[in-house]
Image (cartoon, rainbow, N blue to C red; front, side, top):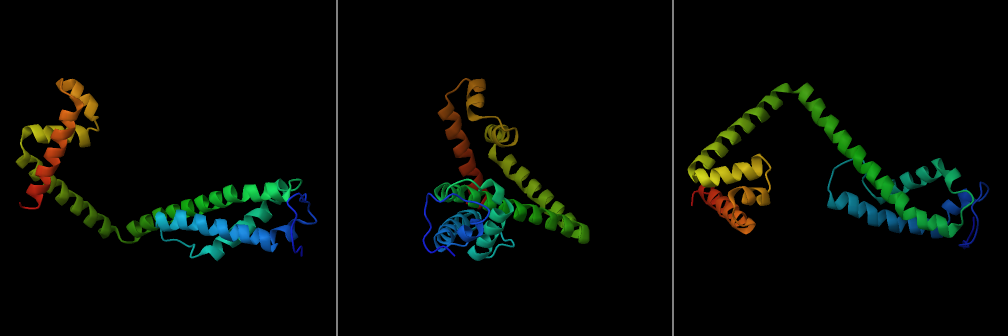
Length: 188
């Protein structure tokens, strides 16, 4: 095993395994793994099969070994420059895997427990009815503005142009309507 690795060393099939398992390269992998796993998994918060940095480091080494032909002929410094992007891509792949797995898990639940889907639909209907009642208590102007902006997805600028008023006027009216809606909902 190479103790100190030279940045100008050209990677070949003979020395690739030693380079990957070199302490200096492993340290770079550990640093970037920690940064990326913190960003992709702590900030976005999905629960999945990755439980720590060690698993991610193993994924990275496996990915490097699977694509070793793309590193042959490059220098160690080039390899170190490629590592952050490679680690980012592996994190993104893991995150996508988790999202797909969660999607299929929800679908499996719906198939296994169809009554849960009915409960969700009932809850949505109840919330829809509550929202209709709240909107009816607002008055026609607020109701119309909120429906155009949030339901029909019409921009504030377009609404302002249609009503021939300044955009800030529409923005303020929508804000006031939402504030009034919140007061009504909270019973104030």
